Image (tube, rainbow, N blue to C red; front, side):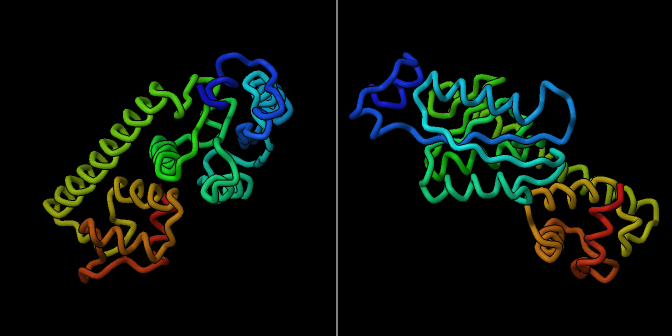
Length: 227
């Protein structure tokens, strides 16, 4: 049994040799509300209790902003992910899954990062721990659901464009694009893509201006901002 497993299952204090090998985790906090049960203090207390129980060394990082902000645009979370990618920490731990992301696609992307880069993700409210076989199973299920959701969005875009064309609409201006296109643009923006990259991705999916060319950055901006 390794140090990670000993800390997780027993919660006992580790001896000197084990302390040199202690797992380092980053505890991430986020709040955008005054609700007492979601305060930064409450979240931090919960994470520190768990770290002590499992024998983890924990470093706290936080953001105070809406959960609708894409993960890559949160300074605290971005710094945490950079440390994890560099191998400076072994796991990311949150008290509630929605502290790190609300979008299923964002969560699936985060879990895929964890898998590729070799760090674990722990969400205490759901009991998700990707260092365990059960957690790996959850990762696979969520990734599959996210892929299905992306496929359905693309299908709706194609269907909506075909219906608009059948009704004689010219789809050259963003205001005439169906709502599915706006949803797709916002989804890509949530992944951290630039307006230029979004226009290229949309073109590859058959979404262009009236001349068959990719949408301009300003047109993409309007798609992202309008519903």
